[in-house]
Length: 218
Image (cartoon, rainbow, N blue to C red; front, top):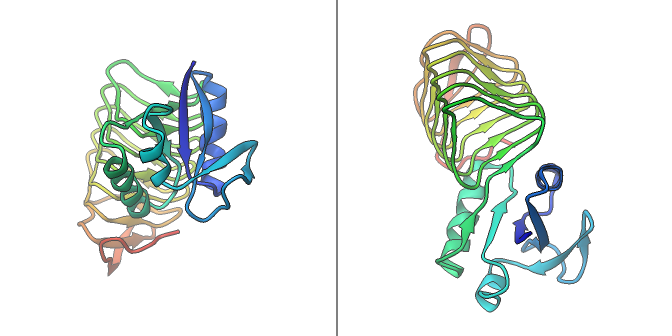
């Protein structure tokens, strides 16, 4: 069984670790995290260090996943890991209870959690998060570093730009486009296209303010 590392030691990382363990495809060799003491443990695994550990252990572990919930922070860590280990490869973690339809594609570094539904010919980008019971219907397209919170749902032919977020229980009807770096608030219903760099919520969802690149949403 191939050894991997997980970067992150927060609540989101617990869900990612559970997904990896349930899938049974990889052996977690340890956890990387810049805020935890080396030698301490997290969720049953040793803390090995931060991304610099990769440089000193090139022949030990060369694959893994970044388990950080915030899209922009996750992207920053991915970049640091590639800088430390240019040949590092990212795995895809898919919970065995997820439903992945024919023709669907899931990018590297993405985690698909319990009860998710990815329907026919939907394209999920790299380093995305599909939380518990979220779903993307047929022919939809998600960019990279996109997050769907628990029970977030789209109709068919929906597109999401990079770094966008569909929050808890929010829904997007078929054929709509959500811009990059955009957040759709919890419980919202999206009936129109939503532009990039905005925060929208409500039923129907409307733009309430602009959003800066990298602005935290968690």
